[in-house]
Length: 308
Image (tube, rainbow, N blue to C red; front, side):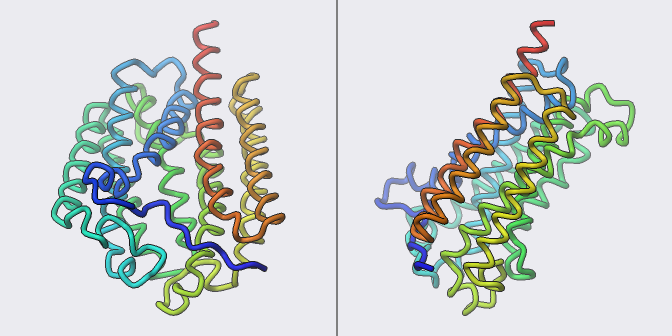
């Protein structure tokens, strides 16, 4: 099996402050997370997503993702300084100052909690759960060898948050809210992210072993991580197919699911064909996959609502 490339999507190539901050918070992650929040909203309560709710959901995702990504860089600064692959990240190169990164954490967190408060009481009550989940992710690899699942839950609970943001305004109790969460979709998104993070971590296999950090690759090797990723994504595909009849998805939603599964197959095909050198290409297909599935579900429910 060929050696993985040394590639880091979070590196900065020049000392442009705006570019460095965008790399720090990985703004593209926010953009591809949003469709899942809106998909969760319309799956939970299609008739309830108004303009202001949509705006506050967007701001909540922006705030939480920015705060979490910035804190992830802060928490991992000691590790990133030692890892050759991550030696060009904004805090390591000092393209972003540590105090500015902390400012992003504070402002992003405040924006997140304000947005939750503006949505409904249940969104506010449950908001610390998502915040803690996102903020504790950097420490997962220091504790166990399945940080991929922790990362998956961070994005899976974006679906959860979108559902609470809308249905919470109409719920009679907290249990009522929880029973209207599209849990199949939450689990599918969680496993999808865990699956691609499992093979992404192969690039740090040797470093993680040396530092005593946990990952599937560090525990079972590159071959084991790839096999686990295929199994996890196989379960993801099954859950996505099940979600079509369970949530009554129409042609647009079903097409989005099928296209998403096709992209899953494609990334594993190029990993099989080209080996570990294909990790960057396989990983980047997930940006499109997330938009295709999340936006497909959202548009499907929205069109159905206005058609009826």
